[in-house]
Length: 277
Image 1 (cartoon, rainbow, N blue to C red):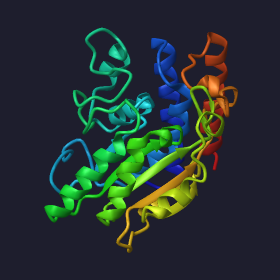
Image 2 (image 1 turned 120 degrees about the vertical axis):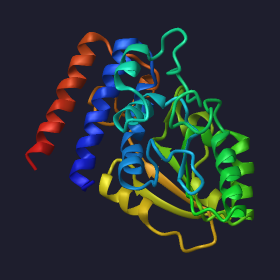
Image 3 (image 1 turned 45 degrees about the vertical axis):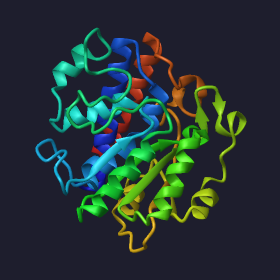
Image 4 (image 1 turned 60 degrees about the horizontal axis):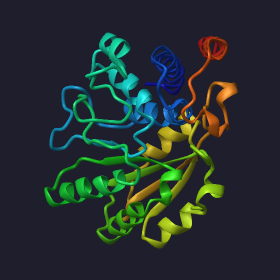
């Protein structure tokens, strides 16, 4: 897809996610909106994966360690035909539904259960190491939150990835500087993240995580080192809907009817502007 089409796709999926959360009164709104551009870049512009080849030997693996931002992932999987859009719209967050508040392998397209923060990178290290042992050409992508960097298991995995020279692993930090209870620096300071990963033997890159062209370029950039790669994607929590942007209280907040309408108007205006480019 062209960059303009990817930008349109991101707005479309933000709107669907906003609708889903409002309809079912559940979801991690700010976190979903924050990482939308990252997931759109991965699924529509970078990864070798689709609904028919998911899980096969040489097919890329995506692991969402920040599992609470699952609504945008559901919407992408529905848009790409992994799951049924109508089924998602009707059954999200309902009794006996597979579409719960964190990723589960009951949903086609999700390789691992995640949600308890800090474990996705370790899973990624295991898959990457296995791929190396099996001479597989697959690449492994792991999305983490910046608040999640406070988890000790992250650093065990980071050390292992560097030790085993896992250059088939790309980890992405959704770096919006906010988490459920405040700024990441006030809760548990992990900055500068780059220095820590450098010390563990990673190739560290930084990018505007809400700039689609920059994201696609850096994610498609070949890793010619013998190191795992970390991409620090600097994002805005709640990106795309002004009333939710850069606010920790929108981590898990559900829009009121008035807020919902404001958000829809903004997203529609963004789409109209892109259509006129």
